[in-house]
Length: 200
Image (cartoon, rainbow, N blue to C red; front, side):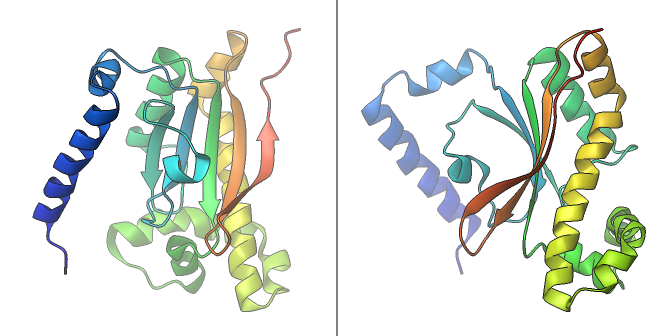
């Protein structure tokens, strides 16, 4: 069992490694950030955002939660979105789900209680909306398809938020993307994309 102290030791080693390559490495980041992407992803520890997109520190603004949800009354996610769009001027918002998502499976199976049970109702609403399609699938395929449908639904919700609507009304604003990540292959795929409306 690895203790938390091990992570602090790893950090010291990492700092020395970065400074050996570039003595000004950390000063560069202390000056500010100008990411072009906001990533809304699942909290799953196997989905390492910068690693799977081959991006460096400073390139991706990140918000993560159980099953990559965009919920209308989630002040945390909406604050991240507002800051990313209005203050950082990001150009793309990516909602990324992943096959094998435990949150999606828990929503399908039911039985979760407490805050998690309340949170998963958002996915259960997606399941209900697509129940005929999902009921016709075997269990594993149903799980995969629910991951996809959930991701698409979150992009659609994102497009309806006041932050995105106002950014689009001002002209420009970010493009929205729904991606899915396959843990077994490491491959990202796009499910849906929504571009800002053209002026006029």
